[in-house]
Length: 200
Image 1 (cartoon, rainbow, N blue to C red):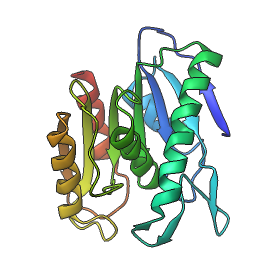
Image 2 (image 1 turned 180 degrees about the vertical axis):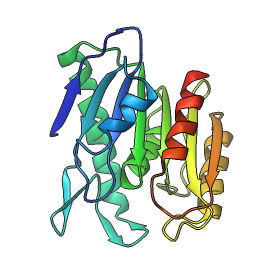
Image 3 (image 1 turned 90 degrees about the horizontal axis):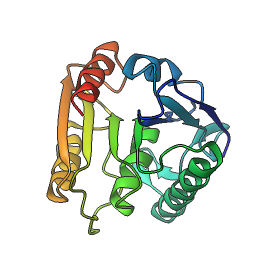
């Protein structure tokens, strides 16, 4: 997978895994990493799927309708990529915190849904429920921050709360931050994510 790895100043800090939204690339969320923790290592990945020329992390059949088979395959692919890059760049595989926006938040949520030890924690900006009707792994000890918009046309407030509920049922610790906005990524929610990160 096309990616950027920047080694951090402090090897004890988590590696921040950056996952862009539809049409973005591996440069998009780099400023967020600087706000969240400018001493951490950063692994920023470009999605392997193209939709009308726009990079994504998995296919969809329509707006808000995921190609479930492709989602499962791409989630496995990303998890394997994390295993491989942890060896290649010599960072702690058990100390990865994902920061995802929209489609990137969905693949991060899918990692949590499918693999117990894929992530230590996750910051999910405007995520949806990746899959329904599946049993989640035990996520005890995992922390998740969800940033959601009360007027989000793509990801309704009920969807955000459903995701929170599913993760909590799997024993994850979930904090949800509301903005009176739509689907856009705001400075306020990034600042809230930074404050959350400092409590980990």
